[in-house]
Image (cartoon, rainbow, N blue to C red; front, side, top):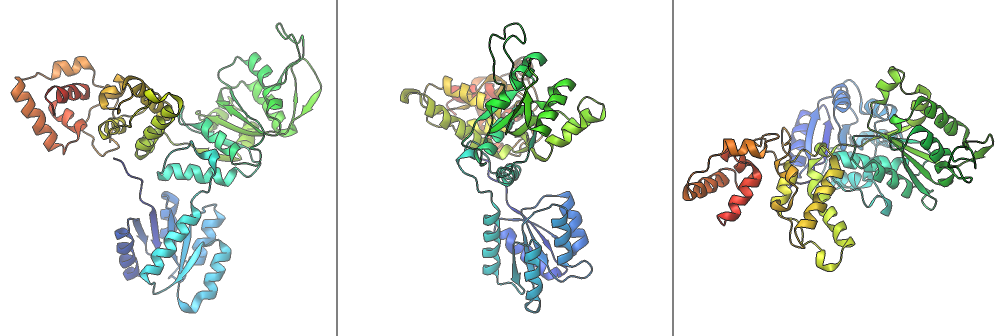
Length: 458
């Protein structure tokens, strides 16, 4: 079973004994710890990598802790900072709090107090979200980053641009932003900009007057008006035409729409959340996307990670999908959970369709398992036989990509039953019970191995 990522802590201190001792203490507590001997290398590390907390010494040779803190906060890095200070410099520690430090502790540090301070600061910095974000599942660092971003931007009126591959859950995030905002009691309206032809999209967004085109039998409000007072989610904004981009820019600037077939503007109060899987910067560069609209949309950006970037969340996502299935069906169709072996298979798959594909695969398994516990044999064939990541989520890289049934049959020649059973037992022992690794060692596909295990009572 995959586990959540360890919180990462960076120690910046020119006292080597403190770095080594405190690093060992925190590692024993379950944190992932790095250390740098001064302000400049510490800042360089923070530019390259992401941490959940920094322990920052106030007085160091060269760049001081206050200087490091000022540069961090001035550059928009809000990583939690616990300042380390001697008794004689408590006033400076108070100054550090004013500059954006989260707390301070005096040196030499009492180990129990240090542990308590770290837990307290990390707990305070966790995103505080309500029911609006309840469908967002995940506890990895990348997903916590998304939740923090939602908590930060939701109470504002700022336009939000969600960046990420198809199927990563951008609409769920847009909905969470709406539900966590002061507009939660007003409408949330979603439009897929790539699903409609330009003429239809124009009418859909801005509305139309009776007789403005064939089939316009009456006046109709557009989605901007429908979302008045609330939030409009423009999915796949990168797919709209230049003409439509110009009209969207005007709405964002003027806060008014003009229905197709009229010249009378209608005032709207709408918060826009847009999303795209496209490289908007490249599109701006070659003239396919308006620069002015791009800057209007990217006021606050959230990058939504692909599922292969957070494989540790797969068990939790799969369990949530089963729970949602059980909520929707009658008691006799409810599923009794998902086996560790099935989780192992799910965690080894590459998920090119991201969370959307995972949810579909689990729903398929819920249908075919007939109310029992989900086993590997209940999963879709493309998951059992499909592409494997270069390094699987469970740390095993032996499984090969894209093996087909035909290739397996050609490669694997079964011996007699007794020899085959013993070979399978031996492979499982060598792989410490990991069926994906055992299948790779045997040169057979995972589906074949599941069938053989059942056949031989293994």
